[in-house]
Length: 241
Image 1 (cartoon, rainbow, N blue to C red):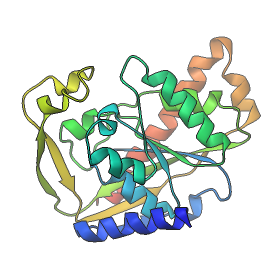
Image 2 (image 1 turned 90 degrees about the vertical axis):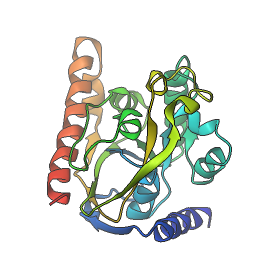
Image 3 (image 1 turned 180 degrees about the vertical axis):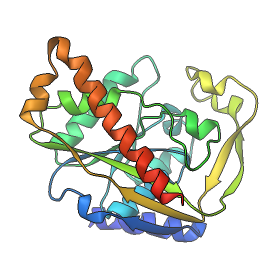
Image 4 (image 1 turned 60 degrees about the vertical axis):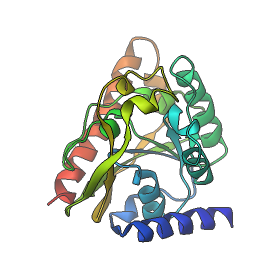
C-alpha cells in the first residue's frame, strides 16, 4: 500500500506542475529484484519523474542540504529519499545506506553528476561528467546479480525556468558545499513535456565482481561508469529531438 501511495503521490505532483510524462523502453526494466537506477539530473522533479515512470518507489540519495531545510526535508523523506550527511561523512553514509536498502530488495536512485547541474543551469540535451561512487557501490555490494539501470530524462518542449533561492542562503544549511559559496540563484526547472528513456541494464555478475579486485578494480569502475554515461547521452539524443 505504501509503495502504491508513493507512485500515486508522484503522479499527482507531476499533474499539479502541469508536466506531461512519456516513458520509452519499459521492457528494459528488471522485474522482481533490487535495481540501482542511474540518471542525469537537472530539476527537483527528477526523482518524482523516475518514480512515476518506473512505476515503483525508488530510494534516492539526495544532497545534504535537502535534509536540513524545513518543508523540503519533509517532502523528500515522504517520497522515500535519504539525505546524505555533510561532505566529511557522506561517502561512508551513502555506501552504508544504499547497500542496506539494496540488500532489502529496494531500488536505489543515484544522480552521478552530483549537485552541479541543479545549481548551474544546463541545457536539456547535455550530460555532465559522472562521479564514480555508484560504480564502486554496485561492484562492492554483496547482492547477487544486481542490475544497474541507466535512465535518461529528456525535456523536449519549452520549460519553465525561474529562480528558487539565493545560493548563499543554502550555505546556511550546508556550509561544506563549495557550490553554494557564490552569488546567483538556484534555478527552478519545471518540465512541460518530458521523455523518460530506459536503457539496457548492466548486470553485476560474479565475473564482474571478480574483476573489482586489485589492479583490475579501476578498469572495472571505469567500464561501468562509461557504460552508463554513454547510454544516457545516447538516450538523451533520442529523447530531445
